[in-house]
Image (cartoon, rainbow, N blue to C red; front, side, top):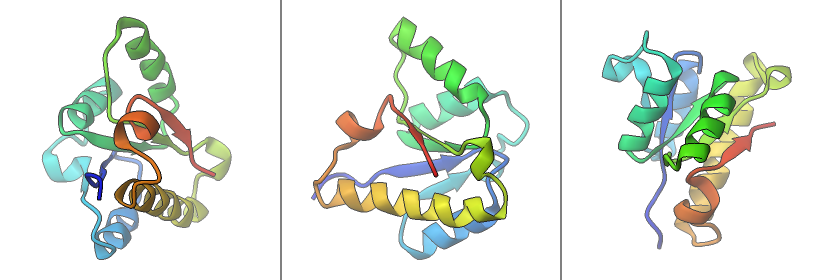
Length: 125
């Protein structure tokens, strides 16, 4: 069994996402819980990377930051990005399903953190 992925949400992800995922035994931290509600996006990504947590976000700025980090060789633990057309109440179920998919794929060995999640941007639909 592989190491289980861990997750981190920025300020725009609904509390119910973390609540539902925790009920499934997933390690997820909300930025509000660690005092990072009002920090810039690069600080969110740096915290998530330091903690080896994949960030879940609706914020398009993370796409730019990802590109910048890739250019300079700076690593992160992955970005699950929810495009604007999939945001709102219906995004909650999509986010939960996507996180569960990645969690199970990695824990069961069908995917790995290093090759399939870390330093990747995954578009949630």
